[in-house]
Each structure stands twice: as C-alpha cells, then as structure tokens.
Length: 338
Length: 292
Image (cartoon, rainbow over all chains, first blue to last red):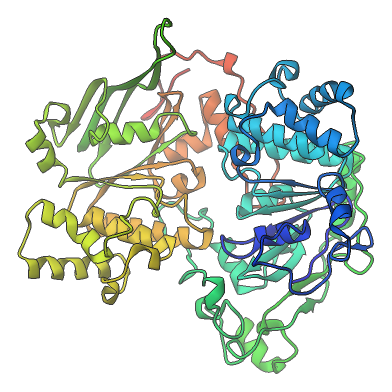
C-alpha cells in the first residue's frame, strides 16, 4: 500500500477491524512487534526514509516529530503515575524542559487541550479522570514536543458521542493552530466526513480507494466504498439497510485476486485472477477544485491552517478495481459500471 | 396494547467509602417510567453510565430493582416467585452487546442454541435438534456448522447465534443491549436487517438499547433518552429528531457526526446549569414528553 499525508492536512484511513489500519500506524513508527516486520517499502518523513534511520535516532522521531494517540486512553496511560508525571517525562526525555520547568509546561499543555483546573488535574492519576479527560491528557502528551505529524488511532471509539464531538473539535482546533498533519484512523464515516481533507479506504491490508473527502462521498467508485456508504442508516425509517454480504476475510485466508471479490456485487471474470492495479480517475469535471474551497474556508474562519499539497497529488482520485482498469476492454467495463 | 409497563423503576448501588465514612449511593436508575406496545421496537439511548443497560436488566430481573414496578402482559414481574420468574423468562429474552464474551467458548454453537430448550424441558432430543437447525436457518446461518465452536465464527455470525439462542423459546419480548455496536460497519447493517426481519416474522417486541442515534432513528418508532439515571425526553423518534426539547437531547443530536462533508456543523454544548436535574417530565406534544 502507498499513501502520503501533506503538511497541515488530515488524511483519514478508513477500514474495518482486521483491515490493517492500526498496523499501518505502528509500521510508520517502527513499533511493529516481532514476528511481524516491515517486509518492504519506504516510509518517507520530511524527505528521510524512516526505515533507514538507526534506532537511537528513531527514538527522537517518536513523540518529538511523529506522535501517536491510541484508542484506549486507559491502557495507553500508566496507572501508577500521575498524568503530570507522564507528560513531564515526555518533555524531559526529548529535552524540551528541565525538571524545574516541566511541571509548569505540563499545566500549560493541559490547559491548551481544555482540561478544566489543569493545576489540580496534573496531580491526578489516570483512573481519577473520565474517559474524555484521559483522552485529552493523552493528546496533551502527544503534542508536548510540537510534532509535525500526529497519528490518531481511533481516538474517539471508546468515548460517548458528546465527548467524541468535543475531542474532534479539539483536534481540529489544535491542528489549525499548530499546522499539524493528522493521520486519523477510524471506521466511522461520520467522523471521516467531519474531519478529513482526504480519505484512504482500506480493505484487507490494501488501500482500495484514495480521494478527497468531497469526491469520496459524492462519487465513491470502489464497490466496497459504495457498500460502506450505502449501509449507513439514513433512508426511510423501517426500511431494510443495504448491507454488504459476507464478512471480512481473516488476513491469513485472503481469497486470490482482489480480496473483496467474494462479497462484491459487481465481480466479474478478472477479479479473482490477480490484484487490480491502481487506476487514477480523470479529475472530476464541473465541481470546483477542492483545494480552493478549503483554502477559502480556512481564510473565512481566520485560521492559519495551510495545506501544502504534495506536488504530484492534487485532487487525485485513485481506485484499485477492474471496473475502472485499462486492463479490461472498455466496452466490458462500460457494461459493468452502469 | 402495552406489552410492558415500567413505572418509577429505580436501582441504587451503594458504594463503601471506607471505615468511617457513610457509604455513597449511586442512583444508576432513578425513577424511570415507560411503556412498550406489542410488536414495537422501542429505543433507549444515552451515554455510558446513563443507566440504560441497568434498566434493561432490571426489567428481566437479571438485576433486582430497588423499587418501582414492571408489568409484563399485565402481570407484576417483580412479585414473581423464582419458579414463576423462570417460566416468564421463556417469554422475555436478552441479546448482549459483546458477541465474544456472551457465548461459552467451550460449547459447540449448536449446544449453545439448544441449551434454553433443555433448561425449559422442551421437546425430545430429536425435536430439539430439528428446532436448532430451523433456528440456524432463521438467523441466516448454515445448519451444517452446528458442531463448530464460537471462535470459528466472525463477530456478526456470533451475534446471529446469540439471536438464535434468544428466540429459541419463542419469546414475545427481547431486550437488545447494543447488539451491533461491537460489530464491523459492513456487518452491522446485516444484523440490523435480521433484527427487523425477526421482529415482523415472529411478531417480536424489542427494547433496543443503543448509543447510535442514526440507527435508532432508522429502526425505532419511539425513543427515550436517558441522562444520569433518568429519562429526560421521550416520544416519537421523528418528533424528537425534528424538535428536541431537552438541552441534553439537543447536545446529543448535534454531536452525531453526519456522513456528509458538506453538512453544516452546529455543535450544541451541554450546559448542566441550563436545566434542573429533578424537573418532572411534562407533555410538550402528541406523546412527546421532556423534563424541561
């Protein structure tokens, strides 16, 4: 799989459990536990391949340049230290504060993530905080060293909707303020619609579709993406939902060819034979360029949020599916897509 | 006609605070009243800790309520003796949230579905086997897989097994406690469709406990919103979505992420000072009540 995140951009990685989203995050941080390992490929961060970086330097990248926010704040925090201790530790390890200045800095960080009464909360242990406050503390810790990329792995899945909304608002505000690139891993298409600039849809370890958020919701191409969007409850109450048949295959027992074939309502001859290549779709006509509207929006809101697009990536909508592949005769394709 | 009437249901838990301090009382459910009509799918929503699961369990007396009344088909469930309660449980079943912990990993799935029939001494061995196969087909599973163990099934399939077990005794009422929240998105829709099918084919009545409001809007005609142990708003789902009256309902509805990037975002933040916790429910529309 291949994808990129631009500076200041939010890329949402969408997929179901077992599709490899979290492993992707861990791979970027080089935190995959043996026997798992990164077989091949490059992870280029600010022009440097992280796979080539020696472990000692990698420790400086983790936390300081790329920060990771986990799904379950209770297990990500150490229960025997106060949250102040844990934030201070991060600051000191990365040389951002001394023993004397760390406490004050931790309080400022908690204040920045809207924790009420930060001077008191800093002395609390994780179990004394609610789920939402714990997640805020974790965000404070991850932002403590001014990272340029934050990877958030299902940061709101364990939280109630009202708290989820607060955390998403907070992430958005911090991103705007600090110009962060955000790689947000989620399975909730509602969260995607609210947060993403661009979306990469994963299925069984591969990215099957990559598009700007407006393109993805307005014109989804891959049958899996279409199925996901169609299965959201929203039609007339009481009507049957449009479910995707079957279940996600375990990664060890993937079917040959395109992994979605057994569940795909539009499968045809080439699908089970080999993995479809990536097809870059022609840019969407008529609609206004998304980059412009996003820029206008940021300007209107008075934010300093600036997206720096990857040179060869603007507005690209790509999909891995034989329905759009040049390997298939055009008239066959035409018949299948309509 | 009302199948289930819940009146002033309460469940308090006492928590010891130490040797000298007096124990604190947690009012998990605090004076909850609602009725569910026959054949209805009634939604109960609220955040974790609001008391919705405790309410569901109190109705089945899986947790004994502290006070209040539960009438099922006109009978007082809380007055039932142990043997009468066991008989009543044929008619009231539950589907749990977690399809992984709610099936015994050491039993074959066929035996899991057969177990309620054995407990209630229904049918001969052969009749039971036939019934289990029939139930498997009913929930969309292959009866040739009866001899497998739960770990050989995916989450969605396990939830189907849980449903087969729940309908094995032909109940009229099922408490579905977040039955799809642990499932993958693409599988949730399958299980919801199955729930709706079973509801109409078996004339089932559901108490559907959930936190996914989009889902509740889709499948429940009426809904009650719980907050800190109390129902703060109740009525027709469409009426509540169109004009939520309670500040908490407004905050909850505005917090749902809308799967449309162009949708305008108007977040309502809950201000606990904007309402009184003890305000009684009052009518504000046709069958629509709110604690304001």
